[in-house]
Structures are given as C-alpha cells and as structure tokens.
Image (tube, rainbow, N blue to C red):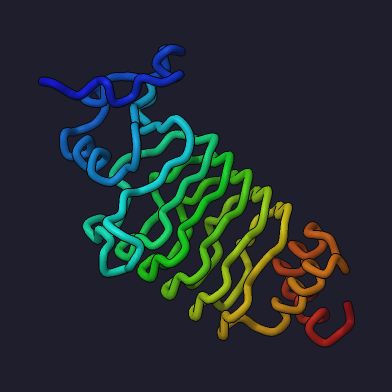
Length: 220
C-alpha cells in the first residue's frame, strides 16, 4: 500500500523519531489527519501524531459557514509541539482529549461553541492560552498548570467561576464579558492585571472561598 511517505521528510526522520503511520493508526485515523491537518504530519515511535512546527487545522474559508464541521473530537493523540496548536473556530468540537501535553507556542480553542470542558488541554503552554468566546464553557477545570503568556477566557456567557485557573500565568488575564462571573473574581483579576498583586496571590484568592469573600467586600 502506498502511504505517501514523502509526507514527513523533516528533522524527525533524520533523528529516527518518525514511524510509518499505518503501524500505529487505523486507515480512518490516517484519512482524518490527511483531511484536517494543514501541512505535513507524521507519527513518532509512541504513536503520537507529530508536526514539524505549528499545528493548524484546514479550513475552507474564514467564515463559520465555510468551515469543515465534520469532527467533534481528535481521534488521535498529538505529540508535544514546539510551535502553536490552533483549533480556533472548530464549531463541532466538544472535547480537547488528544491535544498535546506540551505546547511551546500558543494554544487556541476559542470560538468553539460546543466546547463545555477544557479537560484534555495541555498541562504546559509556553505562549498564550485562549478559550475565549466559547458559549458552552462552564468551568476552567482542565486548564494548563503553566501558561507563559496571556490567559483569555472572556466572552464565555456560562462561565461562573475562575476556579481551575492555571497555577502560573506569565502575562495578562482576560475574563471580561462573562455575565455569570461574580464581581469578586473580576476584582481579583483587575488587581492582578494592574500589578497590585502577583499571580501567586491572585491564584490563592481565586481558589479560597474565605479570601474571595473578604476581597469582595474590601477586606483584602
């Protein structure tokens, strides 16, 4: 069977880190990768799908009506990537299971209206993490422990708590226009973004009922 092995002639092959896709993936999974992954991809010795740098998903256009709506999950496990992982505006996506454990660049799952949970998101993102404009998102549980850049969860109408937020955020934290979010959370984030408190303090306040209530009435 011709598996188009010119698909992934990159540094990973020179390092003997790539493998024949059919050794680990079903034909259905191979077809999914060919159809949806933009650019060349391969499979490492663990059976994880790899790309040489950034990972983007193919689109027919930039309008929602032009996008391919045929998948609601990742049927493969993606390997850690040094670049970006972008599943922006995947309208049927309901789960992040299968996403890379580590993303060196930015991670985006914004504008995914059917995404209700961040379970399966990377544990480490070197750049920005963006889960904004997700109409169904109700919790931040599952977010990365480490976000090196900005964290965005604004414009999520069902988000009612920031509990589950990352342990480390290197940049700004955006949570505006979330009508179900209590004012106490927004005040904590305002103090963080204006450098009145550091993230360690903000994270403690977000995850402490007593401290959160005290902050909301001006005692902290």
